[in-house]
Length: 188
Ligand SMILES: [Mg+2]
Image (tube, rainbow, N blue to C red):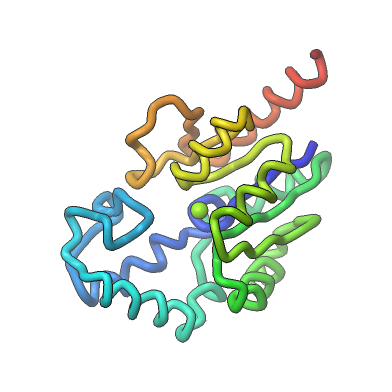
């Protein structure tokens, strides 16, 4: 089975690593991030210009090389890779491909293919080729669900508006749900 896995919010704790930077401009917490487009967060008082500056800092400071891991991610991806094809698909600028690879190799995360898509359309195009997708972006999950693609959405403050998509709280639940889906597919 081909499993499409997003990186930020699924394997890498991007928001957790980004928060200290955000806190230089405004006082906010993990639970305040209710939209991935940071300037759209009503409870965070930050301008679009400041956000733009922050994104530049992310690249300048090589944050993608230093991201913290989501609990259980490495072990789980390793388990899945034993009997599935892992396609990592991230929505990052192409310029960050080298740092993304560095980070994946440093943590020995197995994958058959890495796609660094600098726009949503490209990301969806790649995810559509997979049998099941693990995501944390509500937008992407919505689009894929509308295309009848099975999506597991890691539950976060920034994706709680929609209740119709299958939500998972951690990697343990992700492995269970992927296993269940695979068995069901084999029976059919
Ligand atoms: Mg993500």
